[in-house]
Length: 347
Image (cartoon, rainbow, N blue to C red):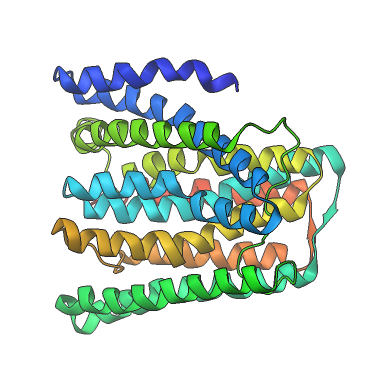
């Protein structure tokens, strides 16, 4: 990986945070350090999944695919940054649907021209995207009438969302390959030489531990850095935390697109988005209870609007089963427009 030399930023970020360096220096070093760690986690997950067979491998991959977002969210939540955590979830969803898919369509379209995607899987994915958007609309609407009761509502919704994820795992195990599950059982086909499972687990564990340390340094320095640069906490969480945490999906999707595998691109983008809603967000709600932090699913109005817009636009562009580079440009343009909106949105 060409980004491996960024690993030097890991001890730099931890050292700067330990010795009380200026927050902006800590933030830059931490953001640079997250890049290779996310890549290492993604590579270890792919190799581990490839060793387990198509069904078990798909489960391993789908379960660990959003591990960086979960680690970053838990660490930020432990530092009392529940608003930033919600912003990072929004940023991860927008990055998956608009940036990852946009880059993939652009790269694949320029190399292979118009590509076709299985309509059956598209229908399942498009339907689930709308359900995921609905999961954010309900708590936001509830706050209009009872703003103090959203935590109990979010806890109950989290139980339902986790139940849906468990059902998906059961469908994937009992009936693999029938395209009924919410996530594909064969998301990744790694053509690289396979390493041993123990080596992959070791790399995964070490990378996750280092990511937690770097995320802790970043979460403490992010708010002061944002204030010094005149940025809102929401913009920092969406663009920086959400974008960097989704870097693994962006790189993987670009690789799949260049290889002419649009179905894998769909699994890595839409499937990852579905998993954020069904697994990562509910787990962060439970983590908030354990850590004593006010974490719920009641996002801000503009965050909900952005998620719904990204969902609808993505659904409209992919539902015909055809993909080209121009649609990729449109998705990237929508992301830039939303980022500009969040930039001007005050906390």
